[in-house]
Image (cartoon, rainbow, N blue to C red; front, side, top):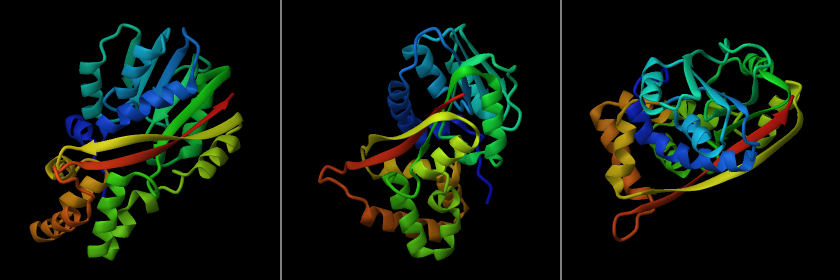
Length: 261
């Protein structure tokens, strides 16, 4: 089963609304000076790029994204003249050497197959003394809206475990992130947790995004036949912590990492 990244609107409903909360805290943690030249690798629908423009007073922001669908949505939503959005990937970042001060990526690093190559590309783009930083979901731990889904899926079908992001992406832990950054040659590497709340108005608000087929968990859900998908839906409805008024109050954690060139 291949991950699909072709529908920016569906991604926004599934995880974009939560990544925006995480991105805001991530940028606050970075606390970069004003007037910096930024690079946003894997800018997706433009969420983090928009927050950089709104909150960090950058000189410029270059957003790089491989998905046509995500890039189209980003270009519709990011109209600030300081921003430039272009197609590219972690293997080939279309930015000249030493032309940015801060290179960031949000919820992307785990999906890049050759992480060492991506780190080399980011270091190439950043000027001496610049910052390289990222954040990723704590898939194996405290991302409750995903953990409830995968725990239910594996209980019904143990083979689903191989699709679980917590199994697929061991990089999404602070020690692994720190090791990746240090091995790339970055100095003063530090990690930090970023915690947010992810409230759902009702079960449909939680469940509907999993039907889109976008990203790993919805992709698995969409691959099921109707009977198996209904069994999964029923199990989730039974296990999710739900208030008397139908609200589902969950929380999520991302791990942030930064280093200096």
